[in-house]
Amino acid sequence: MEPAALPTQYTVEEYLKLEESSEIRHEFYRGEIFAMSGASLSHNRIIRNGATSTQRLLNDGACEVFLDGAQLKIDATCFLYPDLTISCHPDDLAADRILAHPSVVFEVLSPSSADYDRTSKLRLYQQLPSLRHYVLVRQDYCWVECLTRQPQSAGAENEWTLQVYDKLSDELHLSALSIRVPLTELYARVKLEQPPQIRLR
Image (spheres, rainbow, N blue to C red):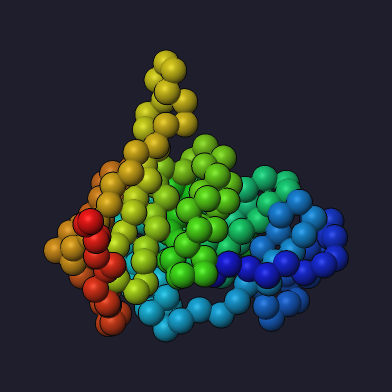
């Protein structure tokens, strides 16, 4: 969900200390903290479904799925709480609190957060060298966008491709993990509406 800014400036140390005792999660960006608002039941179901399905498919134990309470460090000035994070990095698998090397990040979109997740958060997540997939999931109708980082080559640094899935029969392909997530599992028990129709003149 898109956060609301609190007025006080904080150091990183003050922010991390606040998070240890706060009942409300906050994201941190350049000295400002942002309280995270509550989410719909559909939002919660998609996170739960995504975690259950991906963890089942990652059955070799080399990677782990973390829910939305897991804190992700972008750099020394920014800490976020993705809806779902998958990491295969040994430092993350041994971490006590903060992740820093995700392979996949999921964000569940809502009308209030969609622009924020597609723009500002996208640019922040793209700074992470380990990130291979950024997945955006609509909660109101069947629509999943998967941005995949391409292998670096001459003149093509930080190049990403987009794949859109809009049918429940589709499978979300996370090629970096060699798994395919059925959208029927991702949207299990989620009441979906019809997507907006294109109106031709």
